[in-house]
Amino acid sequence: MTVRASFDEGRTWAASKTLHAGPSAYSCLTVLPNGDVACLYEGGAGHPYEHIVFARFPLAWLTGAADRAAR
Image 1: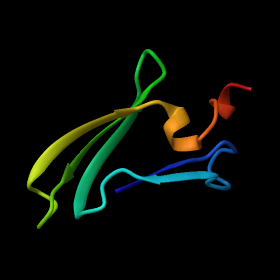
Image 2: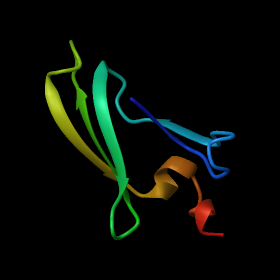
Image 3: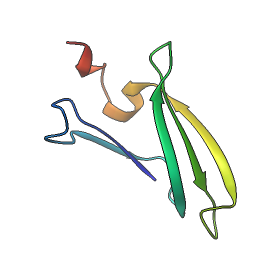
Image 4: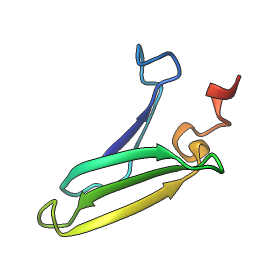
């Protein structure tokens, strides 16, 4: 499961990080009220449907910098 970020309406994808290295399936991504990003997804070690995972991270984890979209 890879999370990517675009700061130009999807023309390019400047940031990318692996959220889950194993098999994964359906995901849903949102921005939380405090500005963190949340991803709910299916993932596992042997097959993608072992667990439902809620991952939460600051945008800076993904971009390695401050939120460039706020500029």
